[in-house]
Length: 442
Figure 1 (cartoon, rainbow, N blue to C red):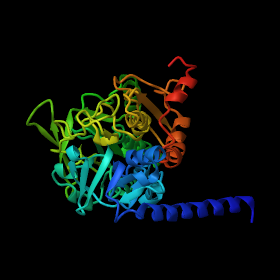
Figure 2 (cartoon, rainbow, N blue to C red):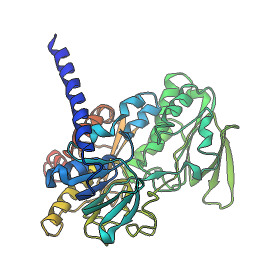
Figure 3 (tube, rainbow, N blue to C red):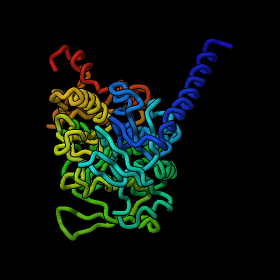
């Protein structure tokens, strides 16, 4: 065997062993244990990374994680899946393989919170108590809030990069495009990865140019927002791209209906209540309305809008001192991204450590988040910013410029960092590296 074959074979064996080992450990306490020192709710990026971090704090046997899904997805790559640049298979791994070994996997949904008694009820009827609770339940997609969906996805020429069930439909619609309007939408709700709805627009433009169909396409991006992007520095750069590539942006336009059988989409004009406009389309990419997990809404843990009510500096719950939150389910006033989860995980790790020692939290989350704005099949504008919408850039270059290097970071390096860094509890965002890159001046 050549050294390369030996390496690959060994790596595959290690991965198989890791999965088997994980399954053994994560199922061992499933039927018997009903109390954990730290209970994590949710097996997405926030839940897995915090389970890994808490394992090192209190021991694997004292950590439980509640998650019903069999498969864990790296969702940021779906932008490229929808554009035909990556496969959907590359985005998923078994949940058993990403849960830290020794941590108990409770394969259920959360049904009810009882924070006064430090307990959680699952949909399987199990009652689990805890000393400390970390809520990482993500958010929910609401295609049904758009008339004609989700049943409209049964028709061709319509897709959405926000669901594993519909992301490949985006690519099918794009590669089969012939002539007419290519529509891209943004919902009138909070969203995860707020740049994704326009990333697929830029990629579609690039694909249609590459295949000689661009002259037959009218590309339209309709958003209810009053601006193209929330941070002016990057918005200005995106407007330049929009003008250069002849893309049509309609602000304050909200999708309310899809008539997939007729290839029509209906938008309301938010500046003119009661006024609607019907667009014919040859393809449409729908970004669905989103909201907090239903189980959180109306519980004693949520704010008025239904999101987990946490202190924006420490991620500790505002009412219950032994409850914490991370990621999309929280009411943190920053963009909901995997990059935000990474930065939050480092702060939350410190917060919980201090609380375990009966000390006051002392590390502050500055709202850091990042959005790699994919503008073609080989360029990215890497937007990084804080709570105040001020750029918080890692590299000592102008990141509002399109970059090939940043594209390869997005497409090739970040997935590796996710699977082998973030989910292992080893990556807490680029903060320390930013200081080094800027010689301690930023």
